[in-house]
Length: 89
Length: 228
Image (cartoon, rainbow over all chains, first blue to last red):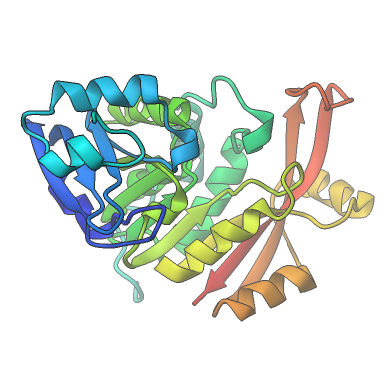
């Protein structure tokens, strides 16, 4: 995704905007990263250039936790330990 | 010619050929009421938005519930300034990405709930779930479209089976202007929108889901042109 997309993204749970962006890998576009809602501490992965802004019931822990584990050094500490809907605590 | 800024006019046949070159929904799910809009319906919708109303060229366009990206990529093909597509189904987004790569057009994709979108768009294109399986599922799409868009083009199920209208559409092959559904019109007004026109079109779908009894099914869908 392009950085500019952050202008139109909100947390689908509490509709909060603007969200925080953490970029892990960037080429012409952001390849991998994390979008965080500062209000509810939900985190949303950016994988293969696509932001995944899904509600909790459509997320898969088995897909999402390994992603958080992979980037735990670069992700904000409170997201790693207290982030929703899954965290590494 | 006076009027809105327009890029080179694209022939409708070329638009239909472009749309037909894109991959349709690979594995439709009944619960999301997924099916791919026919090329003709998508082309009619895009043509109306682009060339009758001037709502595509150089505009910010949102494809809400984009599926495999036909409407969004069609808008990009017709010279939209910027196009964003969002869909809750990861498989559909995967196909949309492949279609984008094949088309070589700019189209920002989000895998998400429609409530992840804020901001302003000149034009919203949508083919929401009709709410036949999940009652009034299309209403949430209308609310979001009216929240973020100025001009909305939205497909809805025609309220009743009208054999005369089906016959008329079969012989004309195009669109027939009809009256808006009173409930839908009231709902749209309540959320700050005004229905400017409704066009009926014929959709023929092959049997896809177990609950479809016939091999082929003709039904009428209505294109609502709405302004905020």
